[in-house]
Length: 182
Image (tube, rainbow, N blue to C red; front, side):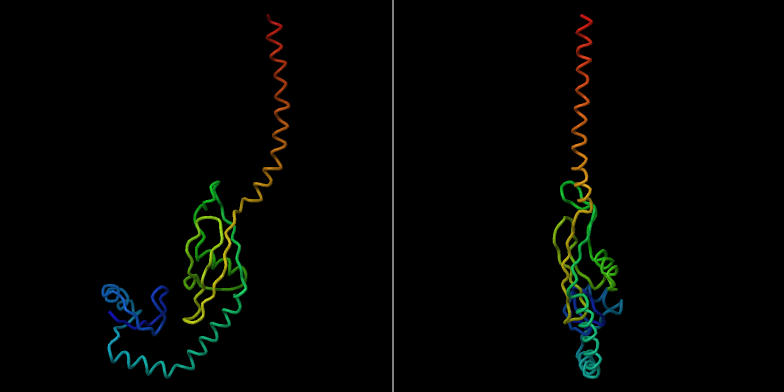
């Protein structure tokens, strides 16, 4: 089924794109939600006329998207997360968490325009921000263990624990005590 999108749908297409979808998806979801219309010959003619009239508006929207893209082009995120001993995260790092981190840096970006595979282990990932059909920015995301500094502290504490067995050698006195009973 051929349809014309009325709004951007990540993973399917952008506003005013003509795309093919399965009939049930178009008939039961996209059209009733007002996200698309059937791509009839008359609807295609109307779309072409509207695109001609809105060409300057579309150029302004693209320029604004490029400006936003330039603002975050050199951003690299490092996200600390709780990690198990095997390197698995408790939970995952997803597009919502990336959006929160960008907001902390002063970039207010909606999580819905960010795509990323959920990070479930420590490592390097890439989040893609879709500002416009032709403006997509890849942001490197590094997931690290937040308890890594705590492990270093444990290593410092370990020598203190090793000194404790020297105190445990005192039970040798107890061994001599039974020898005196004999």
